[in-house]
Length: 80
Length: 233
Image (cartoon, each protein chain N blue to C red):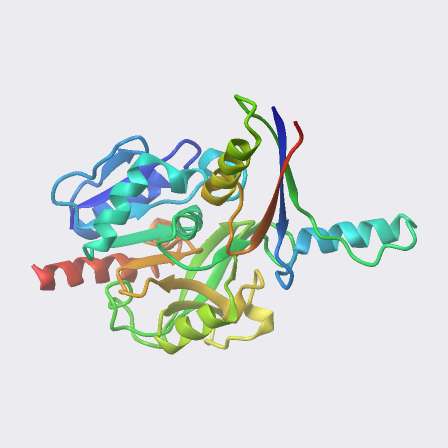
């Protein structure tokens, strides 16, 4: 089973990398970008086919390691 | 002072640290591999040194913070044992939950490798008793992620409880925007845990301990720890 965990910075947390990317886009002439926040995507393959079990495993993975919940939020998507 | 220096894959400052500890205490530090589940008997001080544990993969210090030896360090700290984390060690201590907050990318996104001045905020702690309150010391930094951040409540608590021990400043002790090299909240360079027995700091005091290094301002930190432990014994 395939799944995706998306980790993003909480709002209010300063993101210097996102700011630099935002500046680079502007200097490239890419119009219409108001702001950029950088995050991380983890594509994960799971053993077994139980969706609720998969969600529990991914939540555990995110809480224990993938995200630092002091500054980051995460979203779990089981893609099937 | 019997010290245990933790070694993770990718750590590269452990020998500098061991040398500084030997110089201050006369005792050879024990190197403890990350896969160990216990600390050497009689350990007085655990040091989490600097470097790039696990290549800074995922987040700086994130993977090292979850290695087996860190459970032993958590138990040691819970019993009041002294823990010092420098640079990547500070990041590891934050990731392991032993210290609050997080070290973010430097505000101007550059890796900073140079000497900085630090103001010692108080002298009545095991980690600062080798200095006077308000004293300015010069030590090197070498980091890309040293921008300390925490939520407002945590910062208020750190300040209210006097847990900020070291702050970036000018040569004459002025703390302002210009001397805050990495954008850290409140110019924080080093903080202690609630109980005061775990210190995390970004600068490297172990690299200013011998005349050949051009400065010996870092000695006070180690001498203070030795003095603290001798008095406690």
